[in-house]
Every structure is written in structure tokens, then in C-alpha cells.
Image (tube, rainbow, N blue to C red; front, side):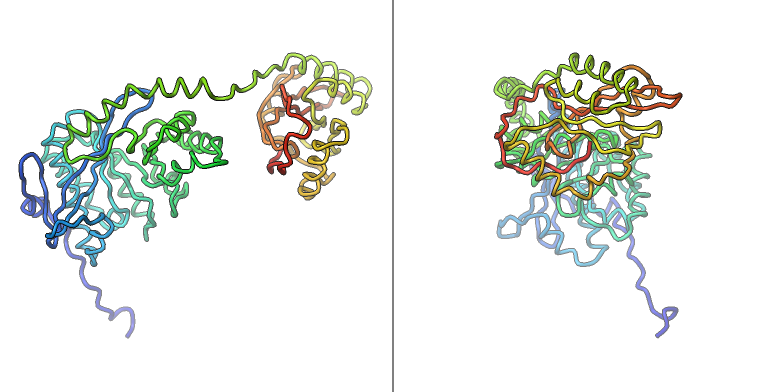
Length: 450
């Protein structure tokens, strides 16, 4: 049969708000609904702002039970919705229950975080209008609602983005949930421009594992901040996790450390309020125990760089100039760039006596041989080159970068010179205040470029 003759079943209209309200009941202070015999209720978990040290919102979580009283997790409940129109019904019904409970239980300030499946938004262009109608019915403004897009694939990301744009235009906030789980990538962050990204529990839990790299978390949070979004860490349970997240500069935290979800908004709030005062005393104690980062002192190196650069300009002898640099502790290598940032000659490395440090450098050079060819390299994108060219004669110190052969943070100093009416940039890499013993570690150095 040709495609022109294939009968496509019409999409059923999305359930109107009146229909959803008719499915809801109230006992005491709690609204609930019944879907296929499954009771759907709301539980609220507080979200705390770290810099403000206060609760700034609550995530509404589905709590469901069978007629026999057995608890059902939300994924299992949604698996009962086998058709798209049933999934839309269940999604909207759960949101209606959450909004009703939040409004009735005195959610006068703060955000209400609501989960929504991306598949619902990508196929329901009218969802923004439904959300408007829902919050209007219960007297909540759009700027009080944070829609959490679960980090799951969508068949049509373009339509999803358009629907998210419609929510943004109505002043709803958007969050990307479960970032760091299986589907996580930056594509959806770039396309939807969320207000908040929620780090998945799987990322948070690694922070207390042995050999966990807290520096990676700091870089991740910094990247998300630079992308224009705030960062919320969910599933925070232990003091160590919280301290590492505060070190990384996350904006918000949520989890058992603060409070467990509760059907009563007031009880969830009061439980969190008791924990908030512990936040900064814990962090102050943590900071006092943490190893202090060395104070970077560049004065002697800058003086040596100035003399070495002048020597190079007069003698055109990189070896003699490098000898001046290598007298300073922490100096590692010297190299020269032309006016275009091109390094055409190999760098000169500080001589190392036989020992573990020399062996590590030799091993690194063998492992990274393709990166250490003597051919021309272009470093014009590096900040030290740009700074030096912008201020000739002055020493520009930038970094740290991961060193190709040190496996640690390495700074670069650069001075722009004029030789035969042509700009030349004299550069040196160094590790300031480096007092690591020669045989401190047999670990292979990290990959990186300086």
C-alpha cells in the first residue's frame, strides 16, 4: 500500500482542565487523584539556596499507591499509560494535583518544581496554554513555577525547544533534570537555555568516593555558570557531599541532608529550617581542615623573565636566556613564539638530575610523542600570548593550564619583544612554589597542553 493510502489515526485532544479537576478529590488538607485505580498524591522536598542560606522552593514528587496500599514508583505508574494521549492525561493530572496541594498548603513564596516528560512537550504544543490555565485556576503566577525537563531523549528536539520557548515567554522557569545521567549532554542546554540545571544524584554520590576528583566538579559547575544557568545538586545526603558541592560553588542543594519529602508542605519546610543553620559552620570547619593552596608568588619569576627576555633580544641565544629563567625555583621550560603565535623551535626544558621526576618526564614524552614533534605549533589562542602582544615589554602571567609533562597546574609567563622590527614573544612555563619531592609519585602525568 502506498504511503498516500495509509490511514493515520487522529491524535486525541489533550484533556481539558475541567476534566482533570473532576478526577481530583480532597481529604483533609491534601488533594489526590485516581488513575486506573492508582492513588496519586503529592510530597514536597525543600530546595535550599546556598548563598542565601534559606529554602527557596520545593520539588513536588508523585507518591502513588495501589488499592491494596502498595507503593508504586512514578516510572511504573507512567508505564501504565500505553498511548500518548494517556501519558498526556497522567502527566497533566499529576501536575494539577501538585499545584492544587502547593496552593492550598500555603506555598506563599518560593518556587514549585514540577517534573514533565520531554515527550509530552514535544508533541503537545498546547501545553503552555494548559499550564497557564492551571496556575491561573489556583492563583499562582508563572514565575513561581519551575518546569523540570527530565533528561530523556525526545524524538523531535526542535519542537521541544519551541515549546520551551513558549513557556519562557510566559515567565515560567525551565530546569534540566538528571544532568549527569545516561542521556546527559550540553545539546539541550544550548538549545533550551534553561534557568537551572539539576546535577543527578549519580554525580553527587561520586564526590565522597575514594579518588574522586573535586576539581572536575568545580569545572563542570563553572561551565554551566558560563552557559548562563544556575546549578542545583539533588540527592545530597552526606556532609562530605555538601562540602564538596559548596567548594564547587553550586547555587542550590536538595536531598536528605536538608529534608526528606513530606506530604505536608509545612512539615517539609520546618524540617529544612532546622538544618539550614548548620550549613556555614560545617563549611567553615571543612575549610579550616582543608589543605591550604600555596600562595602564588610571581615577583622573582617576573624579574628573571624581564632579564632573560632582554638577554634573548640582545644575544639571540635561547640557551643563555633559558639559563637565567632556570635559576628560579619552579621554572620548567622556555620557548619562543613569532608575531603570529607560532613556535617553530622545540622548547628548552630545565635539566633534571636522575630520579623519579626525570623518569616521569621521559615517560610522558614517550607516551605523548605525537604531540611533541618538532614541527611548528600555533599558540596564538592562548591568553598569555594575547596579553603579552597587547602590552609589549610587560610580563604577562596566565594560568594555570594542565602541563603536557608535569601532570599539574602550570603557569606561563610571556614578554613581547621587538627584534628587527618584528614582534617576538619570549615564554616560560613554571610551577610556582613547587616543593613536591623528586620521588613523590609514580603516577603517570595527566594529558594536557601548555
